[in-house]
Length: 212
Image (cartoon, rainbow, N blue to C red):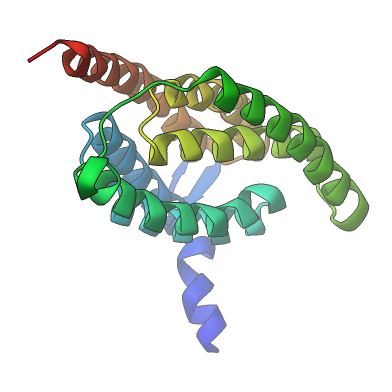
């Protein structure tokens, strides 16, 4: 058995089978680390970033094996953003203090909308022209929404939760279509955690705005 076979073994070996649909150990690893990561983000715990990196590695291989090439490549970008976000949360505030929760400015929204439209069109074209993707538009839209949401998360912008919610609403049926049922269930859980995160970050923002 080659080293590559050893690395990919968890992503081909069924952990459980429900209703005739097998779930691999790789998908289980993605489920556990993903749920823990989002729960930590909702609580503004910086440990979400290293846990998120483990989640990215699991999903990078899992999505590539399922033909979700944009989502797979996205995990590499996530790892880079996670390293930046980890630093920003701990030292990105004024005078190297922890970063507080803030709002997205109109100028930032304009940049996000422009980047979102351009990125979606570009990624969809790449998937249709150079891959065998069967869901190029869904894959590209969720990829771009996730990138924009991650940027907002690294800067603790409260509106990042709305972007995550929009992405998750598309992800759930997309993963079900690809027979990644456990991952689809995970993203249903993400929706609930996003609501929790939005509530917690709004409370933190209001607390920061109250004069001492």
